[in-house]
Image (cartoon, rainbow, N blue to C red):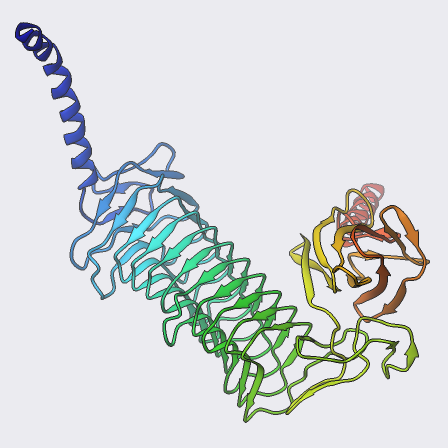
Length: 503
């Protein structure tokens, strides 16, 4: 038996040495240390760095990178390239000064993806950078996860930002950027826009805190014309904070479980729009402090300690007139028997017959049920939505313009109650030339009421208790191509024909 073990050991010894050698080589690769440069001519310095390229367009990491002291990780000096981290990590030494994990300053059309960046002052650094993509990365335990100075038209999407002091910060005229579909988990601040960083879009991100004092999900300071849409923001002291912010749109967000305020409209903020947000289980749904001329409309206020508190703020508006309406207030006790701008026309419309008044809050057209927002699609850079106000549970929303000019959804009415829906359809999305066709479980109904607005139509109808499939059909639907494209094509053809005719 001993002899067999000795022989087996001798036979396996070369294999063990080979495996150990491979592990030793791997550990050397993982321990590679130093700053790496992708030079403007496409070369990689220093030689032997764990980055490779075959065409000087796409660069792959082949191992982890460790950076000591006050050194940077990867510095990019070449435009129009793709850097694929392939899941490897650039690890800094947590130095608090100007250390950068990935530096794409002054660059255009650089994509950074599938990379892990940890332990720097700035995980990903943009300065005077434009038209770059940061996608599919994990950025954690840096002072700032991603920072942009004077950087525009960059896309930051589908990343995970976790445990950075500031997760994403755009400052000093960083405009027209897209921050979308990221997962952000932080104890301090998720996204900051400041110093005239205008016309950015923050959309469809999941932003979570841990109820740390003074923490904020999104901060907009001294900026204008930004859009914050479709985000989930929870477990902060404040969900969204605006100060000296002008003409920003906060639309369709879920803002829940924040210990101070869901939304804090702070000093000097004017002409902002807060619409179709679900504001639920916050100490204050919205706090207004020294801010004016803001519009708060189409929101759902649910289970907050106080829905709205106003401290030294005036001339803020809580509805958009008729037929757009106001907000849903859980404590509103009015009835809906009438319609019209004076609520004196017989027949319900989904709007309460009497105003909701609470101190300085005056909502002339309170909604009778919660608001449900549905994403209908994006065409030519414009996002379209449909809004349903209903006492029923709405699900399975469907819209596809290639299938025809209709939307469909399921509605489950509460037990013992007649279901109702008040559906907002944008006139540019679907329109009807001569009435609408509304089917409930394939049976067309004719008892609906139509309330045309400036940009949308509002349809109100009721249905029997139970789960119902509802289809709303018009005559036309958003075209496949904008009308300007065929017109331009026609002009080009005519012009070219005239040139040929002259020749």
